[in-house]
Length: 91
Image (cartoon, rainbow, N blue to C red; front, side, top):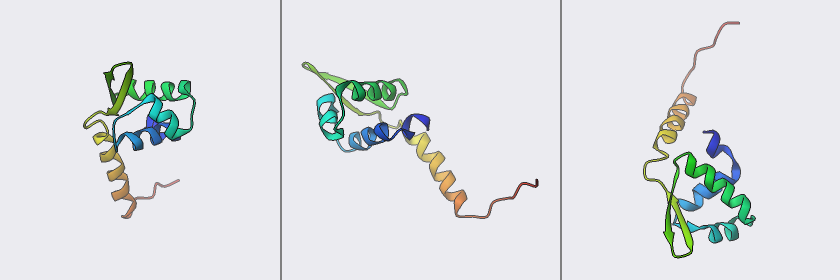
């Protein structure tokens, strides 16, 4: 959850949900410098959320299949809980 809470990383994941992109594409779409984009991609790779695929001198990034399923389950559980009554802890 901490990895995807960063606004830049969340935006990268959102973009990669639509298509595979290289660092240059992400720089243009985010309006960010290459070093910042590379840093966030490294964090996402180390967290197991994105995969890479070399293509000539470029590296393309894509969401790792199923990588966000656990997060989706947690958020769905929280959403379901928010629609119901919850217990109040005594002080």
